[in-house]
Image (tube, rainbow, N blue to C red):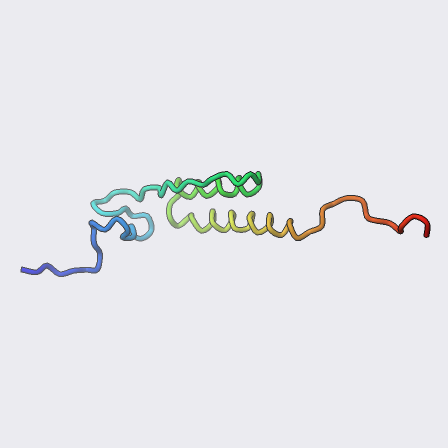
Length: 96
């Protein structure tokens, strides 16, 4: 006999976990993704990338706060690249 199918395949490793961190198949708690990052050499960017690891330790509903913080920090870093570097303001050329 054919069993009804609810659209969820408990054997699918890519299937989403239960909503709101209630656990996956067989009552397991959600597991960290464990996706690593490589250092970029830019301290501000590397700090933000390490901050992403914080999401693995938080319930799913707290992830947006981490992602928004990282996005904000990366945006600030990019915006800083568009600003002129602080330094002496060029004056009139000598001999004027």
